[in-house]
Length: 334
Image (cartoon, rainbow, N blue to C red; front, top):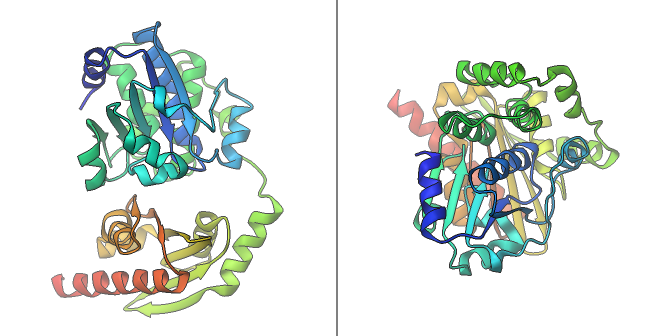
């Protein structure tokens, strides 16, 4: 899968406007990859109109990043006028929340560029899926497009890609050798690594601190074999709360949150858990859990998310059942 396949679709559809969409509460990898991709498209065909949109806004950290980069993100993008729609760092249309139905009803071809496991429903809907789970981030995939096309990358584009990669690798803790080579090349273009990393150092606000503490206090612990599974719930910051619970010592954390009839569950696990059990949270837990909740789920091996409908207790109970089955299945295989 390459940038050539993307340009082929653009040429075939007589494209005038391209819409790049990020998942709801878009993180730095999503907005930075969208920015770098929009720049690359504009260099390929300057006459095209390229717009970046994010379903229901962007994260607090992403807003901080926008103060340091010339990225414009529309919270109410015009989906109907798009000739081509690209989903960046977004492997299911469900992650577009309030924009999902508009995208489904659009006649524009959909292109997915992501480093998460491809979702079967998305593969059926999309004209083209460019996914690579071995990539540290979507930004890393976009950088490959620059190299593939021999397009000179300027310092601002390189800075955006650096920030997106740094965010998704937790400041390179999760980086592999390929990622580190990419980082070195981005620094060679003029990126000041210390200044760029400082942009990602955003003080935790009061409400996030409270959400983390509440999630820890409410956590119910279960022991399956040698593993500690923690289930909890908070009304916001589920992903942050799940990370906090892992940092405290749990092997797997599932934190749910409910808004009206919508249910969200964030899943995190330790690298040790993934390596020893071979359980992929995105494929093995989030995907079937999303289907059970009449929604969608997906993500990485150690970090995933689910959007659906139902009660918190029922969702977490099903999550625990899936984890138990997979852990026990792993025992019998070994």
